[in-house]
Length: 247
Length: 214
Ligand SMILES: Nc1ncnc2c1ncn2[C@@H]1O[C@H](COP(=O)(O)OP(=O)(O)O)[C@@H](O)[C@H]1O
Ligand SMILES: [Mg+2]
Image 1: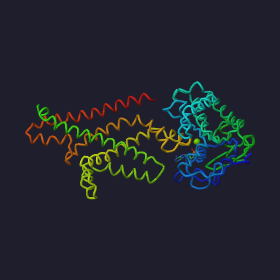
Image 2: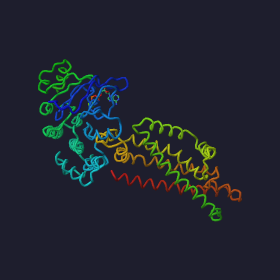
Image 3: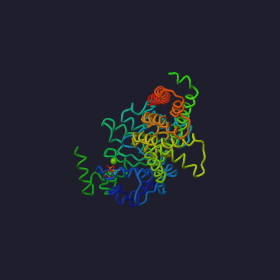
């Protein structure tokens, strides 16, 4: 894999004030690849995700998407973000809009599609995530799992090249985790490029091509899932795995 | 008691003067306040700085001083305008600082994730603000903006001291005509009450409307 790099990070450093949260992070994500990022809380996984579509700026290093450097704030950055979809831990659906409007809003505003075209496509996407019958509800009327599936449909509506998931199932009740993971597995099977921050090892094992283990702002391991889970090389990873496996 | 019926046209002119000042200055304050709030939320440092200075200076200057500055200051630079226009400028700019801060407080009630989700879909700063953040901020912003505009209506009385025809200023003429001070002021107060209650009513309707929209 990784013959055709879509996302590349080279020696990326990020600080929050004096706190050094990304330390010389380098990472390549190939087109069609599914990369799972795991690591203890506070290790910089969210920051890494958010840096890729420049919701966070970095102090040094280089991030390229499709071979181009991330642009400065402005039109070019907005255009790049249409190519890099993001799914958040807390869903972040637009609270004042219906489910259908949530999915159609960006295609209408950004891609200048007609409302009718956008809605037709939105209904297809909602159908794909199993929510065709919820189109006219407001986000607050849906369960967490349903909201997260809408959020995935919303991200897909822009036809992005890659999807970033920041702990998409961490805010969900256990019985809803699987419906979201199933949608993500299907995306992976369809060849979507994905970066997924998650502690769901079942997902990592079944869908990921690579697992990236982070601790203290560094990438410690970057390997095939089976290898990583059965014989982690670093002490940090062994320690971390023993903790999440015992509960 | 007959101070009102005897001087209907004097009152009328004063009342309309205050209405005129209030309406035009409100529009100016809303537009400028909106622009400044957008500046203060913008991803561009120089705009943020401009917005901050604007608000800090205007919010912390006594309104009377601002009237002096505009009415006496601008003509020195060759800007000669009708007094009423000067008054609208002074009142509008002053109030825009409060409108801006009310809008900003409203924007801050909208969770950060809403704007981040919009931006990560490729929406521009203006689209994010206009289609996602402000509609959600709107509801919490309506009551404080209503209060701000009511304050503006009352503040417009200061313009009377600068030869602008407005409601409070009518008391001078009436006093000279020998009418009792009590009734004069009762009728003037009633005039202000009509204006401020109207503003209140408009904002109550707005609040109801937008309350249902969610
Ligand atoms: N906006 C912020 N301001 C200051 N510190 C932050 C901010 N966001 C995250 N941090 C800190 O940066 C570190 C990495 O955070 P994060 O990327 O969220 O880690 P993770 O997602 O792996 O839990 C943590 O120590 C966190 O407290
Ligand atoms: Mg996180």
